[in-house]
Length: 174
Length: 376
Image (cartoon, rainbow over all chains, first blue to last red; front, top):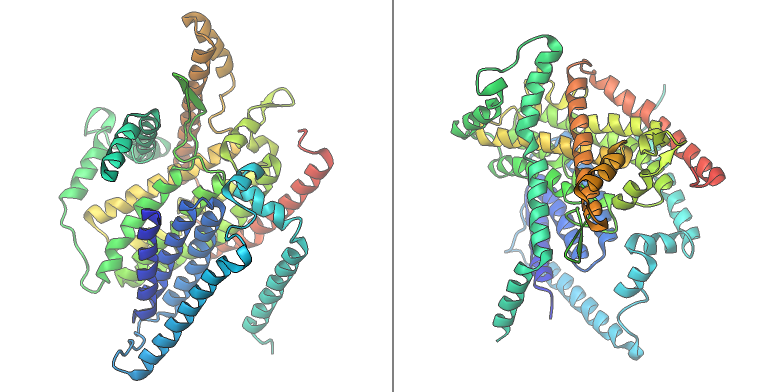
């Protein structure tokens, strides 16, 4: 039995995703994505992953999407993009392909769940997290011990990305 | 059958202390959040008058106290006007988000210790999550959307300019504020606001309370400047800079919708002040001298350990409110003392001064903690 709250939030997430993909105005698309991030954060909160929920809202809705909307506003992208043409066979073909891919993915998950009797729940159950002292402690404990090297490599990658962006945006000095 | 079970369990829940405590806390949040707004508006008018040597509003009610009520009546009686060129949906959505986001952030801030009653113990905090302050910050981070939405949907160049200014200054100052916060997380060793308050409850060198403000004044300064920029208050109220932009992002708003922006601005101010109080001013920790007061009152009324605990919690809520009111007065004090910055000065301050100071402060804090530990 699915928690009714998760079901409602799931419907909200799905409809916002549809609105994001089908909307003809860029700002509606971007704002749908913001709403989607917040609703996704709410789902994480309901299942007890408070840290992920807060980060989802803080990072995606609070920072990244602000920049999206900022650039849409700054460039004044008011002209609407062409709407999705439902009479075109290509649209339906793409939709069917994407739907089939998702169906295969879900079947794969189902298969994996029963794969060699492996439990679908990982090491970090709600009890284990409570034992560690909370979500934040569990995540940071892993991040600074087991995945420390990977964590540092990722931060280096981000630094490289910043430098690349700076180089691209830099004005040429005559 | 199942539905009867559901109803009876719901009924049992409604009668439990859990529900009553939740309801009381909700009411308290609604009092210190939105309830402070009319008092703040009054204080702002009378305070500015006091600073500038004027009288201020003094006709409506004693000392002009009912002026805020008259303003609200005026807002609600006006015609709700939507400009013809505006994007109606987003135009109406913006003030709603503006009013909701800071209130949601309030839910995560503790305003008192624990209350013991009939074997039941509850935290004076609406939602006690173990991510603590991150929840408040997540909701506070959404405050930038109403400004951008209002500016964009109004379809007015002054509104768009105000919105762009608002969004860029909020993003810029969030970074310096985040660095100040990380330094404080290192010192407290937690993001749980109750534990932060407990940490600040000790005394420093035997004379000062061990508040974040005295332990790391640089972080406190950066955070304080940051909240002025985040709440668009003077001297950083450039999104509404009336000399250049008429009224900035809400120039096209009138009647109830303007009132909602106005209300949201003040709730956001009290929310930011409550965060500052919790992080740097000892939160609901007792003010110096209140411990003795509690002991004295306990002797006078012959309270037991339980009664003393609850009395201390009550005085803690009082301390929190006093600190909060001081911060709110501080906003007004600064507003009518410091003139507005220019926009390039604002950006310079945020990126070239506060950000490097914040980074250096973070590194020094980390080194200091490595060498002297948290034995401060």
